[in-house]
Amino acid sequence: MSTTAAAPAFTRPDGSALRVLVVDDEQMLTDLLSMALRMEGWDVKTAGSGFDALQAARDFEPDAMVLDIMMPDLDGMAVLQRLRHSGNDVPVLFLTAKDAVADRVAGLTAGGDDYVTKPFSLEEVVARLRGLMRRAGTALTRDSEPILRVGDLSLNEDSHEVVRGGKEIELTATEFELLRFLMRNQRRVVSKAQILDRVWNYDFGGRSSVVELYISYLRKKIDAGNEPLIHTVRGVGYMIKTPQ
Image (cartoon, rainbow, N blue to C red):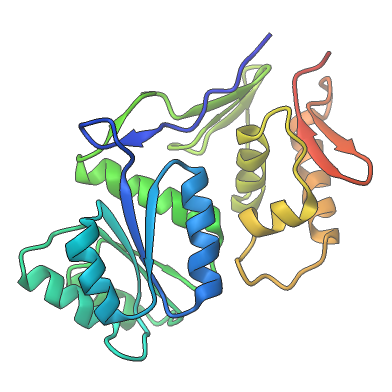
């Protein structure tokens, strides 16, 4: 019987959870990000303004920050400048509603390490933070292989390669995120609402029909000609598991 390899668990050198400070004036967004990051094993603290972020950065000593650029009191650029001026080189992932190239360049040249443009998927933020920790070289992992497996299906979270029965499968970005979410929850039923929250944009206004559509896309690519791994639990949601 196959088992699923969990996503690598990042820790501090002393074995404690990595700390992330999430800064945004939209409480709904900080709540959703906090939930997603805690599910990944992070120790999370939030702040709703630039000045609160500076205080939290001093008190909490985060290993990474998710920092909104547009805030009413002190914007993300100013927060970052003050952090860097004080000698704090914490990796920063910018959140921005702006999609102009100049805004992205400004954030990175100001000392930011990466950015995502709103709206975004929660999975994307989690993946970007994990990438920051790898590049920073400050995190340890308990599992060196970022590979999820269900039966003869494998998914590499770093290279985005998906293979079933020795055959590589090409997936779109959304199909990949959906498959990753299912595989991280092997033998658990996940509802359409959970899938929308984790795979699509945090403020995505779509209907459950989009989940059904993408499940059908995945089935055609993953299960075609094979014993099915993706199962519908009528009235509840979907589950991925090895054949009985």
